[in-house]
Image 1 (cartoon, one colour):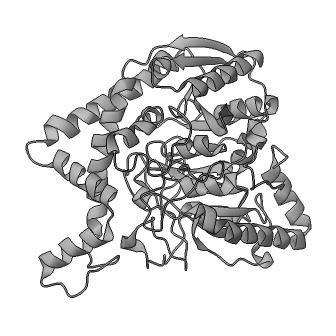
Image 2 (cartoon, rainbow, N blue to C red; image 1 turned 90 degrees about the vertical axis):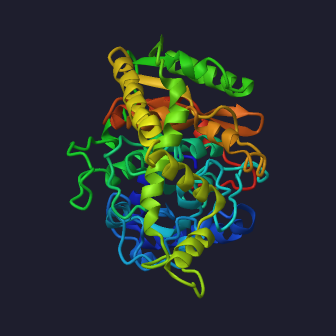
Length: 477
């Protein structure tokens, strides 16, 4: 994709030339079908027509939705056998707003089952491969969305981020991915994993491309009482590319250890580029960072245990054959419908919520979460943004960590704190480790998405990492 504002250009072209819109959509559909054997990035493929390319800010822009968003009349599986045959009777707010702006849904992106995973290997529909190296993971849980954008299957995709599930795959696939402030985007119609952490966001090549997408998605919704009643800034109009005088904090705890050498080299170069653009870089302390991993893996499974209790084989979802009685129905339906990782997290969550352990684990985790949020509050008293690694290293090999949950969970160590605090964060391409992309994470204060997007845009005006394309998947919008 040669332009840093390709989505805006696509929409403008399509508004004046519907035939061009139809041609672009068909090209994307062809690329999706050709790539499926190698990447497995999508679970289902829609059959749009050029007539669906309406006017609007996103007129005719092809988009892929993570298969966690309900789409009326299409299967919505959450990457699970439990919902493999579920057809959504309504659209998620994210879907309806994007389509109202003219975006055209191409299909549903593959994902870790119920968004539980960091590699897109827990999907009932098979693992997704990284377009940069098909022996590597694309990251998770929104790995299908990130891979689709990286491989040029669509210029944009939706995702969800509970503990890093947009930023981590964006980093590993060399695209831009933003998780807005918790409550910035409606969760209505988004299948729940951990309700106090889940947040919808988007992927594109650049920050400039993410801006109109997030602009369309954000805002209050009568169907979701957790959406913040805060005005939505003009994200696209705020992209002046000027960060002179901005103070960017580097949290010592993020850089202390655990970042692979080539990744650290690329990130240091990115930070120097931000300084060259006029930003003032300072060190900051965030002492509770090291507690984020254990805190998240108490709170998120607890909420998952509660949210996934509804899948019991009675109302909808997978139902076992010939149950002997009600208990047998519950046990076998859930055992057959949920994969190993989902079962592991349900068991963990049930344990920490049980009598005798609630105070010892869950209540303490919630108190620690408050301390982590306070870290961000203090940091943002003296800095405008934070810059950190997005991941400890580049994409790892498929199958190398799937049987080691502790190692797998550690891949999210740099993304979890922002999720626990609910602040907006974004990963932008920032170089390579060998032949694999590296991502720089930028974090902003609550509801400062415009500042975050502009900083990413400034960096991308000065660098070309976001324009690089995986060999064999080159394309131009």
